[in-house]
Length: 307
Image: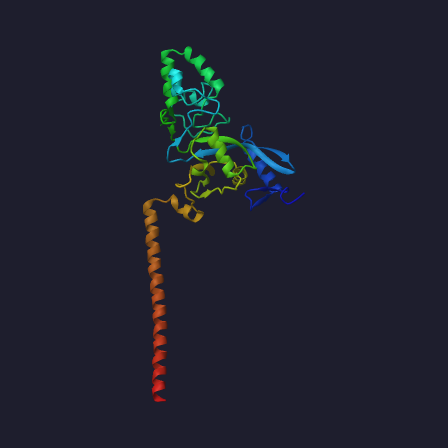
């Protein structure tokens, strides 16, 4: 068995020994026992492949654009009367069901289709179901349906411009495998929600509880990284962010993030005092050296005059 077959890739440059991955995987699946987030393994050309659901949290600051049609739709939304304003599927879409008051948009659901925080476009089959269902709706039901369709976790979807901002910190998931790169995972997520924005506009970050934030390189494998960092998302989460707004935060910087401003100010004052001490120490040192050099020059000048 070759070196690559005995390892699992974290990136093109870094390989993780197969035995280490399997050990981490046992811990990962034990943590998710009884849930749909356990990962499966399979062999492909002698290579170990992990596959399963990967949670991704929305960390976008700007609105994104959703497609008004999918590839199979050729009708105009104004032909649907009430349904024309609804960018999602029929009532079988979990986001269309009324939420209990006080429910959080960041709850992690056990099913792949229960946790997305964006609505997707309809397929032809779902369009026919919507048409049949609309005929049986009462005025009260239609009003309630419109209310729930326009608001998702407190953020309102503009059906005229197809612009939407996902609730920051809310979670969705995609089914991926360990051979899928960062770019492939991003494309899959955007395609799942029919997002029109280009993949190049977004990046993935691993955000730690400490505040440390590491950007996934295009050639890295997010599912492998998830297993390496462990299953507990209170400790670390994968976020999707804008490519031009996100920035990495090192561990050294992250350890200061949670301090209050007065505490940070006191740190700055201490550093200034230490800086002043170092400046004075260096000034005295080089002043002494300067005096010694000048003294030697004067001594040589006097000796030359005598000669």
